[in-house]
Amino acid sequence: MVRAHGRFYDLLSSQHPFLETGPDGKPLTDDLALRDALTPKLGFAPTITRPTDQKLIFVGGRTETINSHPACSLVFKHDTSWVEMYEWPVGHPESLTFHIDYHGNHLCQWFQGNLECWAITPASMDINEFTRCVGLLRAKMGD
Image (cartoon, rainbow, N blue to C red; front, top):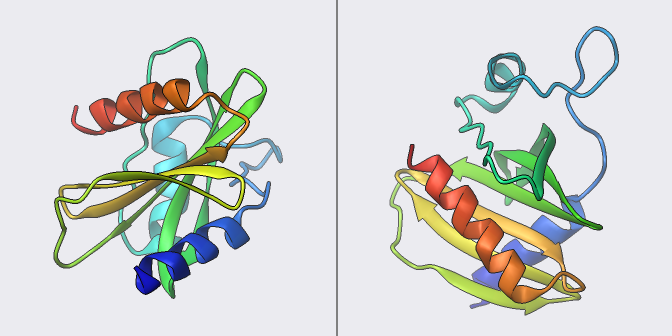
């Protein structure tokens, strides 16, 4: 659990509002353009997940460094809350999935193929709604 607590800290401390932008200075929201912009910076092609749910709106993406690894962060707006999904490749995926509340945030971790994925939102968001949003993100990644 010590390793996981370090990861939580890295995820929470990395949150910032800077999204990948296009030549016009606006956040890239086109899946292909965003993937093309992020892939060289990350060293892997991120899964651009875009659920069709009207309450979970895709805002954009950016690169992050989590535990010294390049990671992709996708940002979604849900009512008055933000939901951020992080993903990065791992050598040996685990089957572990868990939810936890940590420092005023809901967190969920899962593995999808060779990617380790996390979703984070403020604890002010209803936990059942957060769980539903995570389910939508996971299902869309499987497409």
